[in-house]
Length: 493
Ligand code: ADP
Image (cartoon, rainbow, N blue to C red):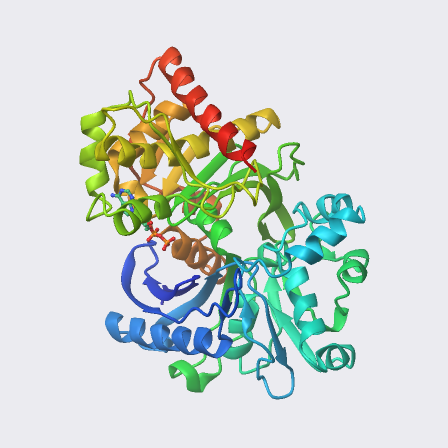
């Protein structure tokens, strides 16, 4: 019995993938669920819909694999991070919709706390920044804006959870209220150095301690599913936030190994070993994973728009009809492109963190056409990664290996150009479902389907290595043009 069910609860869809004891995919199922935008900059999910989609894909994946729940050795959970849910402990009913990580409603509270000089404390204890992205101000918003909630919270009647914690509660029929250290590290309430909820931060954000889940290792005994749900009880043995799970699924277990995921946005996560490195360049410090009580830390940079720029070229401008067409066009243009596209549609993420910047196309000449603009869209993904890698290097962090995954990495031109721009070798794995795989590995470690990290690392297989071929002069010239374009969009505020 070595099959493992990985639940991958993402921002727009929920998936379940069953892996065998070799880490090979056996079957899967996927479901999209509704997004709610009740106000400008607000994004919500319905916790009941998150749960029902999860249960349905788990059941469907078992059917597709022709397996019973009793054939499963364990379940692993990976999830959209930071998204915050409050529910009633007695009834199990959510008391508000989930406030999603993208939601900006708490920007004024973050600005107020920053003006009052509290950001240094948040950075020091959590490795994060004062930004609406993280859970703390989302919880405070619910307590202060839904009548009676704060009182109920103070009476100990409510529970808080990130999505993993909510799913675990539902899967165990309300018997377990817990999370793992990676998800806890994204709340802005968790002291990543001491691995405990931080009283000073709870006071700062006015979050009662009675709301909080227990924090376990990422591979741990999280309790078993209620037998009626899947047909028999299955132990939940691994939990990690999506980007950390991807790092794990890419087997980046050594200091200096990084993975970069290219989907709608891009998330680069670098393993920094037992050292929680503090960035001077506005990268985040976070928990990569915690095993047997031992914490491995990571540095993280996020780019809001990566594949979304290609979606915009397709759906917004109609310049291409399929994302994959971008590759042909870029091959025609080559790397000598004077056009730059800065996709700052919702501001700029790391290392700029400029919420006011907006997008631009610069460097147009009379002979610029569709191909040049589309190529600039692909190149923007590489330039933004270069910004992150430069920030990492300026922080003195080691970067030895870069492994890529996500929907964009099928584009060979893009990954070659990425290697050229970064001047590092870029490795693409055979299995690019790294997020779910990471959750399966964590659960499998706990139940002994996988013996140790070395064994997991030996399963990682390279599909292709992309080595840099660009001359230093060309690289520098191209990148200077990008910095010039960035300067323009951040100057026009
Ligand atoms: P997410 O998980 O964030 O929804 P995916 O990992 O599924 O995203 O990746 C989808 C993104 O990748 C889309 O934004 C799409 O535009 C982009 N994409 C897919 N294929 C290609 C390609 N061949 N070239 C460039 N971009 C691509």
